[in-house]
Image 1 (cartoon, rainbow, N blue to C red):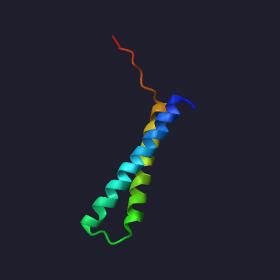
Image 2: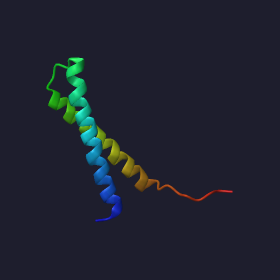
Image 3: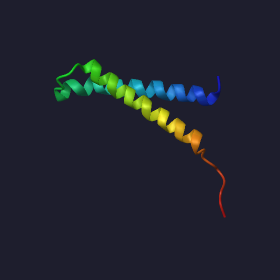
Length: 69
């Protein structure tokens, strides 16, 4: 598997875990009425979409390291 895809998968996984865990802690503290697991899953899904959007943007418009003069 390409290093780029491994990096993307790792970013997606850790972003999901971080937002899922933070939502599990914060939702009860705020008194959210819907299921905490549902809120955490939604937040984690949004985080993964954010990572995928960044990946797609980099594929469409790659970063160049050239210095213009």
